[in-house]
Length: 320
Picture 1 (cartoon, one colour):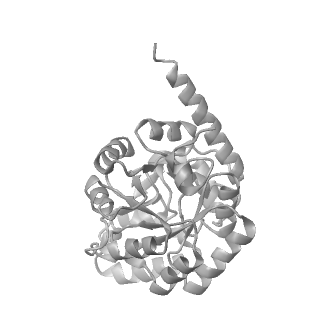
Picture 2: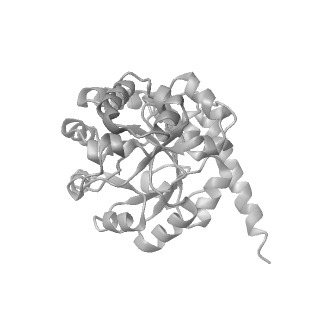
């Protein structure tokens, strides 16, 4: 069995976190991942306190195992955040911004705090709040990501925040990726795109099929996004979404947003709320090129674990 400090901290058997991919991270996926011995994450973004509470209740109906609730710092809904603290999941994870007050509230509630970052500077800022785990996300990741590749970001963050354990995110979809993360000094992997292509993920089947058919170069950064939603505020991290190419993204990557910004903002928000975001921007990482099947979450986790253990055993034989 492959056990790390992450397993001890979160009371899990396998050092894998399912990323809180919205809308894919529904209770069914979260529970399936946790039941398989890893840990699932429920995304709170765009959910009301009532909806989030119902989702947490549903997760607990499906699994007795640990799980995480994630909040996007620049979009935190106060009622939903309070509801998640009251529900007492195993941990709260925070992303896309730094607000020490939120971290302190989680700590005062007696819950573990995980915090995602994209640069060494951000990691040092978050480390000052004494979080339990820092997730270092490389630019290969889907959704909102930074500009530094995982292979150079992870070891730098490990060195910068020691002894706080670091989890790798971005570009991990199989056991080789998990093994590489561990060799770079991480204590586990935060995986998103691979879990989107799971039977339990609550996304349109067309999105899953696009992941299977895409190459890594088809997952592009939507550099026009900041023109639509503005520069990040003081609490927000500077990130750019990565998604599979669509006619929508091809058009706006090739032309100036200009006076169309407000219309496009409305169109995107409507797509998110109606579950149609995959038609405009199916958030997907470069790991898409490694994925060739839609499988149950348990099968995905078992395959990753088996391959990682095999890779690490073979690597150890290189030392004479």
